[in-house]
Length: 458
Image (cartoon, rainbow, N blue to C red; front, side, top):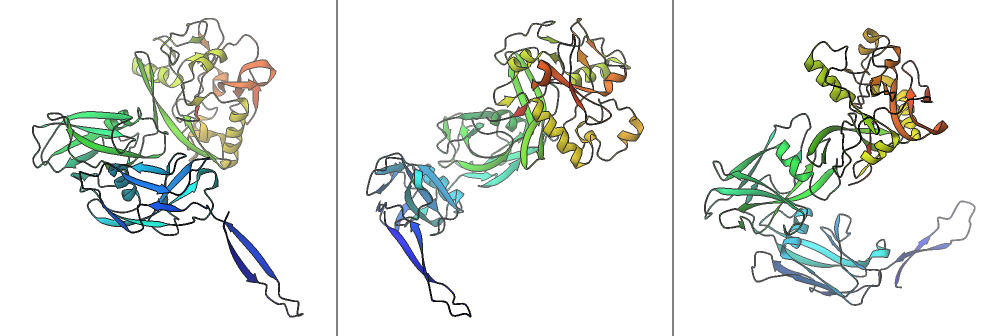
């Protein structure tokens, strides 16, 4: 392996010690580029170009990583897995997207620096770096502007985003907005139908956009790069040869589809103990497993009847309370009902969360301002920390196994009962005290309690 060697002279101290030389070794990738030749110009608007072939001098057993950047230092870069051969074809659409990500605007020219490294030695210095001068595709898409960010807010589902394009020469008035995680719009695609309105545009609500991107194969509750285009439903062609790039921050909500049942749950972002976690901010309220199979009522779970909770003043309040309380599950049912990408917290997980909340100021930061029943409601609900973390834990009692939930209207309703894994004493769930930070396993004949999950992956 070739190496750069840099010799540095040590500073001589006043006592007159001898000069010493130190060798700093910077490993090199030992991969030399072949083509396109340095400085090659490529017009991505040329319809005759089907792909651009990037090649190097030897096969790489661990796999090659093709790297593009807007500077010769490669500090800001886009990386592509390029296989184990000696070349890799990049489509004009992909190269157009790479140029966009590196700051070259649609329809303009820019210089990209590129090199190749071994996938298992990406920190090595590049043996050679070439440039390629690209003319980006002239896009017919107007708004949202390329590389703009759209944040979808759960409390503003009716907020609108205008998707517009150059409609010159287009037939008909029936168009769809198409989203994908693929710049070529050939995979992982979702579309929203709509009629064009004035100036060749379609206005979509945040809720409509959210419904589609939730079904794309990408991580949730973070910013993702999404490609979009407009399909002319009369001709079945895309309006623009090049897709637009928009960075979408999706809503903090989870749409849970189980057979014919669809439930939506708010999600809260929590930062504690140096980590970021996403938790369901509502109690689980489904009667089905994720595959749509019905859970057995009275055995695996229990739900309140339409006449409960009895303390509510009217039917509307009872309906809101039942939604907040959710259903009551056994441990086995809670594990069975867990949706893909989520996890049932362990006793240790809950302990860490409550400990962090206590350090932050008070355990009431975790509790619902609306459906938790404190011992001193007037004093606690006047506290500015009340419900501050948005987790909205509810004091809704537990399921004793006698066919009905219990302990909703007495002193125990100040406690919080939650199903968890690995609860001590072979218990299925635990109790968090209303008055302090005490936890204890629930024992006796009790069968179940409320369920929350936290997000672990897509």
